[in-house]
Image (spheres, rainbow, N blue to C red):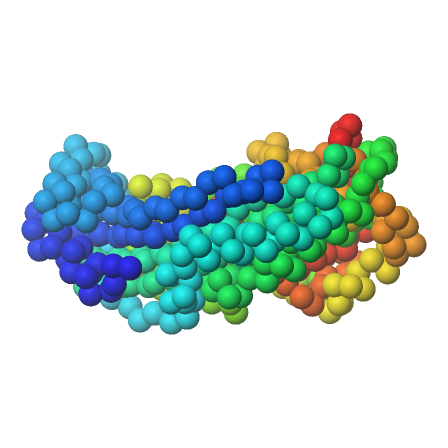
Length: 450
């Protein structure tokens, strides 16, 4: 761990020497460990310490950005010089609002000392105990267990000084037989918060119950989407619909629909770095405090997230959702997508299904088919089951879905009280919080032979 004082002091040296009108330095430093396993044996152990430093210089309204992965003083100063030289060669940016002023930040307590110092041997023991479960059931096992310490810092020549250290532990576990598989996963700021044995047991039981899968025809079915499946859909909706760039470009299913009903009254989707137990940052990569933003409120399209530049240009208030300086033109993006919990116990969701499908998770999702209508397509995987009269009657072969998500989530029958943290595309500083969902209608467009 670098530590607040040492990391900020390293970055401050850039500000003191920068010839630019305004200078910003942000850093994401990660210390991560990863244990991978396949064929029921550990086959790879990886440890990585790295940092990415983004330096942005403003010269007469011209913006230059340069990046390094070194905290060496000489190399930081050279990177700052590169950013300055780039700025001088760039055209003037008429939308540049200048760098933000200092602010206060809410605290997020998601640092765990034991997780930051977890050893490869401790990870290996956890994996060994998980594999024992599938060994007893004559199943194979594959997956990964990872821990990360992430230190994020932002400083600028206007006096902004922000720092946060957080940890995360994640696991995914696939149990396999000759013709079936099952999946379990978990995420927590602390390794002790992962119930790795239960995760393995869930995967092994799904694998056992889905042997000899039957084939069913594609079509429109009732579905129970488990939290990992819901989270995968939300991750894509966040990318293609919740960000402010597609909203402003009329490429989002929110575009032109703010204040209008677009899905079921049950649906509330939002971004909140301060969600209980979440992996998140209290500020964005410009040092602006993060705020909770509700995208869809009880079925009504409500808002999008805003980075500082596009917010000021469009007459909005920044919500603390700027990404790293090299992505300045991409607008605001949320890193903590959440779906509000419902009123049903998760164990009760099945009872409401006369004939339908339970989906453990999705993969191979594509969200660029029809963004304005929120159409996604993808495949089920590692635990797809037929439900009849409120009970699982057996596994089915995987199906491809193609559906408009506002339409599908307009058919909500029930949402679970329980929610899970699910690893997202940048798990060091964000995650997804999702419940299980019962939808009356979900469109499957194709089938597989496995």
